[in-house]
Structure formats: structure tokens, C-alpha cells
Length: 287
Image (cartoon, rainbow, N blue to C red):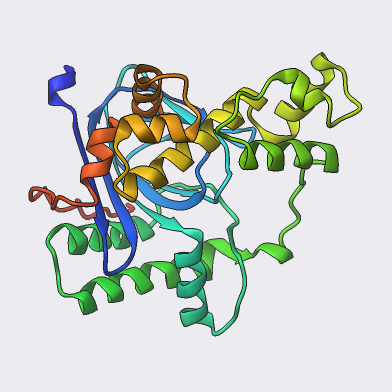
């Protein structure tokens, strides 16, 4: 499929404070990366190979995808097939408020599965996406949003403190925190080494094994998430690139497009522009 046949729709809903995301006719590979927010999505068409936290999945239409913040993942087409994909992206603070509304409890939600094959929940994602894209009344959007989260809470989630999750050791955590704080600076491997007792080779191997991405990829992903926030606040792309620590505008644009599927300007416009009408999500039946 030619690039001009690809469609990418992203819309930020100010009522719900979430992003609705649609990729159609996509053949692009998405390299190993992570997000600072939750992703609830599904494959609407095509086949895709997904790698997430050391596990591999072959996805087809009707499969549910759930990413926690910092779940590192990448995907690629199977046999060159195009991808049709819909999702909603939910910031941590928005998710925490919604979970408290539903459960009456304060806790950090953790998805217990990254992939659920042929899930009925995909229809609820489609309903929420359509409500957002058709500018439905706030009540209808809220109903769709909370109904979706209730389904996921019941079937595929648990409080974070109840999940047995292997976390990086303290030295690796120190490196992560340093890069998150000094993302705009020119960080070198020697800078990281000075905070550990590791050698260069061991640091790279240990960090990649424990975090799921290399130190450089981790830093670039942190920079990407910071740049997204700057763009959402109306900062010009060239300034967002500089503030986030990217070497130049061209590198920033290419990196942004590779990981997000949009240019920085296209991403920024979703916070000011309203999208064109799109085809409602198909109804999936699991037969």
C-alpha cells in the first residue's frame, strides 16, 4: 500500500482528557519503545507481530491490546499486511481518577495481560472511539468510557501492589531517574557509569535486560514524552525539540514520526483542530 493511502487520525477529547487514536492502511514498523500512559486498543484489520516485555504475539482482527505505562514493546507487519488499529491513550492521573470513581478505592491500576485474543471488549473501544469522533454529548462519552474501564477492571487488571512484578535494581533505577531529570542535557555513557559500580559492557547489558530498552533508547523515549507535553502546551516544534534535548529539528521530526506515526506538527494540531468524520469502528463478533 502506498503512503498516500495511509490514514492517521488522532483526537484529544477535552471532556474525558484522553486521546482517541486510529491508524489505517499502515505498513510502518514501530521500534522498541514505551509510553508514560495507558493504551487500550485493538486490531481492526490486518496481521501484526507484537513483542512486549519479552513475549511475542501474532495479532489479527479482534485482538485486544493493553499497555501499562513503561511496558516496552515493538511491532511489525506479518507478510507485508497493512494494519488497521484503534486505541485510546489514558494518562495515569486520568486513569487513577476513573478507577476511584468505579471502585471507590485509591490504587494504581496494572493490566495483567498485554494481549487478549478475540476479545468482546474491542466493541467497547470502538463505541468509545465513535462517541469521541462524532462529538457525542459528554454523558454518552462518559458512559462509554466508564463501561469500557469496568470491563477491563473485572477481567484484565489488578492493583499494582498486588502484582508480582520484577523491578530493576537500585543502581539501574538511579540511572533511570537521572535521565528523567536531566533529559535535556548531553548525557554520556561515562556520566551513567559514574553513578554505578558497573563496567560499560555490563551496564549496557544489565540496563537493557532489566528495563527492556537500552539506555539511549530509554533517554530518547523520555525526551519524546517530554516533547509531546511541550507540543500539547502550544510550544513550537522547533522549540520543543530543543527543550526536550534533541540534537536538531530534523532528527526530532524523524524520531517522532518513527515512534508516534505522526509529525510533531500533526500531533500538535490534534489539541486545536477537530478531526474529519471517520468510519465507525466495525462490530466484532467472536465466532
